Length: 76
Image 1 (tube, one colour):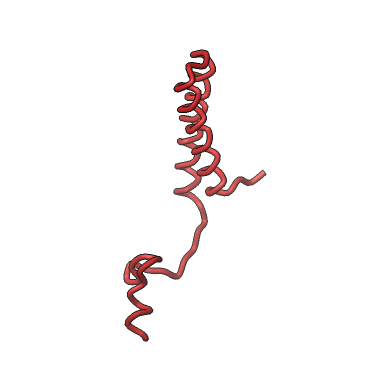
Image 2 (cartoon, one colour):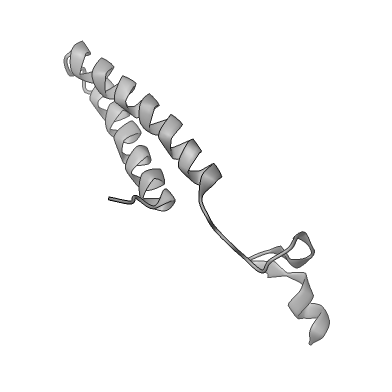
């Protein structure tokens, strides 16, 4: 089963938000602790997957940002 990098980003975020909610609700320490350790392992896996993802784009730094493309404004 091949997991995409974005799926891992979303899943890791949800797990760590769940840890925060569980800690705020004073759930048993062992649940919070084990979910925290699991979340840290997910962070390491997520960073590895994002950095090794085979993502190609035709954008360069000259294109600036997605919400403020400079190249398109100069062409018009």
